[in-house]
Length: 395
Image (cartoon, rainbow, N blue to C red; front, side, top):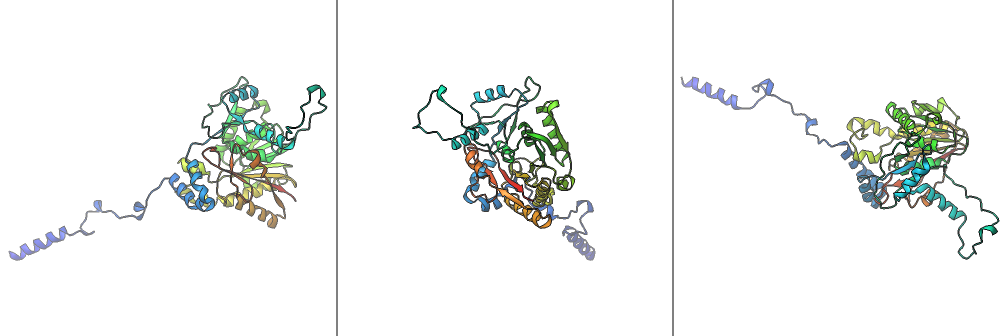
């Protein structure tokens, strides 16, 4: 009897002792390492990445840039020349907005023909001639209104004019700089290699100088947005843009040495402002890590293809909306090396430092950019980031 009680007590102790063999299968679980890893949002991962890299790249400027990226962005209103543009400009001026392109043109005129206070003012009937206009180094016929430094007013949504098209296009005003840098001339054939969502393509069309304009984007959704922009802003009988959805990396083979003047290469990038503010379509999602790491290679391939699509003496403008020098200056340098070594094609970077002077009242430029120009977001002018570089094919 005592032995039986001993066996029962031992069995009871075994049942109280935890062990895998005695826990019902439905209650067992295996601890997984993945469940213990901290889960951060894509925007937080982007900000951590920028804090680590841009603090080194920009030093003391980074805290100000960081705050600006996280703050509300400023916009510009690109006037639609196919609409009642004179009425639109009058309404925008009543809002105390200024055409920053026209302001820059006036700066060019003042530099070419400075006023001399000591010179006597002649009566109109005695004036013998009007001095010739100073050469404008940018693409013409573009009007883009912005609010002045420190003014955080907003433009109301664009409205349909009496001509059936929208009166202006709201965009980051710094996005117009690559189009201005292209310097489109009358009769040019122009390619926008990564055209979606369509703001820069519309600006190119508004110059009125493109004899032939091709707009391409590999993304089907971005191509649809491009078509919608053209439909909303351009009369059907004036819309002569050839829209395609090809892999831009192959454009050098598809249309080699075709474009006699201009190619705009506005490549996919980390889109810094979007990455720190929006979870939707964020390239810092864990599932897109490989895609993000391959961006510089993709950018080099697109820039090489764009330059191969131009004829000798043709021009390409490379642009991104990131602060990363790995996606900006380094991509330009690598593309030039590849063109020289693999395609026996010489390319020269052209100086755009005049843009710092022309647009200094509207944008804040990074003073230490080694190649090209970079617009920095700052609170008093929260545009950008926008990098752009003009390259000329020599051979």
